[in-house]
Length: 108
Image (cartoon, rainbow, N blue to C red; front, side):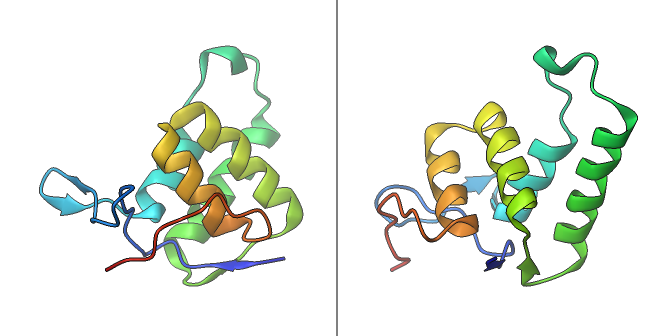
């Protein structure tokens, strides 16, 4: 499965770096927030699943690049789709599953 560098900054559709509170918004911040967020449709989420999400978030925070298993890619796609705006979803999907590119713009 792929290695992904979550330290890169999110880019808009024109390739400009997306900022949040005056700082570049990284894939690391987006994916970790998506993993750690409680979702209304997951009120009964098991402790094991919460632990799995925590461990993946911890892995993303501590390592660059990150080797992702197929299971981790599926988990990230699931939580990012619930958490993110279409721009973030498309860019993160391209990052973690390069076999299905959505047409990302390279940084200028």
